[in-house]
Image (cartoon, rainbow, N blue to C red; front, side, top):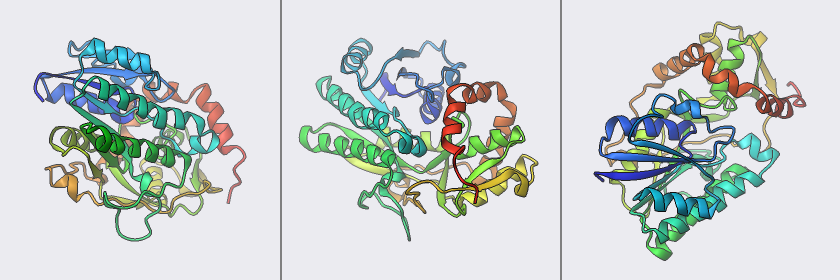
Length: 341
C-alpha cells in the first residue's frame, strides 16, 4: 500500500487520533486526510502536535452527508477508507439513540456507497465487541452470533451488517475489526477510566454501577490502533477480526486500582449507584484470527493502566476543557437522579 492516501473518518476521536499518529510516524509513504465532524468527542487538541505535518490534512465533515463525503474522496484521491467515525457511549445511547442511528447506520451506508462509486481499494470498518452482547462463558469468535443489547451496540451491529452485505452484493473490498474496551491517552472523560481518574484528581466521588462485577477486556489504544493497521494491510477482504486485550477485569477491580493510584480512599470516594439499564455482564474476545496475521498487544495492563493515570495527571490542560459546559449538563442528567446503593 505504498504511496497511498488514506481517508480516516472520525480521526479527531480517541482511537482514530492515535491511529493517525502511528501511521504518520511509521508509514512514510502514506498521506492522511482526516474527515471529522468535530462533535463533543472529536477534539482538535488530540492532533495538535501533527496538524502542520505535510502528509496530514484535516477536512471538517459529517459521514452522513453524502455530498461532503463524495467531495472529499474526489479531492483527496483516497484509495482507502478507515471508518472510526461513530457515536460510541452506551449511556448516551440510552438517553437519546437517534444520533447513534444517524452516524453508525446511515453514516456507514453513505461511506459504503461512496466507496463503491469511487472504487476504493480497501474499506475498513472499526467496530466493537459489544455487538456480541453478554458472553456468559468462553470468548466470542468472529463466527459468534450478533446479540446487541443496547442502542449503541445495535447501531454498530447495523453498520457491521451493511459492511458485510456490500462485500457480498457489490464485491466491495471490506475489512472489519471488533475491538475490546480501549484505554489510554486522549480518551474523552465520559468513559470509565478517564472519568474516574479526573474525578479522583479533583477529589470528587466516582459512580460505580451496581456491584461493579461487570467484566470487561481491556486493550491499550496503541495496541488497538496497531491491530487495525495490521488488518488494513494484511487482512483478507470480507473478513472480520477480533482485537482483544486479554485483560479481563471487573469494574470493581479497575476502580480499586484507580483509587489507589490517585491516592484516594475507596470508602469515601466510591459510590455504588443504580446500574445501567440492560447492562451487559461480561465481554470476552477470541483474537486468534488477528494474531495469525502477526498482531499481538504489546502493552502489559499492569503497566499501561498506571501510565494512563499518570498521563491524565500530567495533562490537565487537555482534559479540563472537555469537562466544561455541555459535559457538565450531561453528567448531571446521567448521575444526579441515580440512587446510591
